[in-house]
Length: 158
Image (cartoon, rainbow, N blue to C red):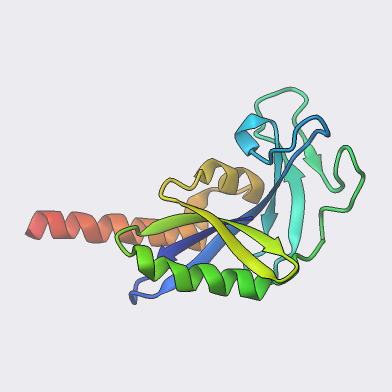
């Protein structure tokens, strides 16, 4: 899962968006969206998956309610240990407080979620494509705009 956290207006740390990435082909074990994988928006409150899609750069691009190779259900599926995954990244972000936004790669294992890595540039194209809506319409975009305005005010006054 790619889980995105931001520092909010009160100085807290908030998980605002997530996508579940998966490989599209049995010939590839990677889930990289930019290398032919698919991704599904995750409802941040519940951990429920939406339909999956690829990067959208081909005439063969599409939306998948089931996995194109295995036939396993995607849309509507609930991720296990979702509350724990969100809590983990919200607890981790303060340790990297120089970053307003972080994209966390999280594996959900049998014994709990595990952070794989943190990304200072969290591939927001994946978030926007799977949401089917502009980032500015969501909490993620509103918090990013708040940070830009705050930084501009500070630069002008400083």
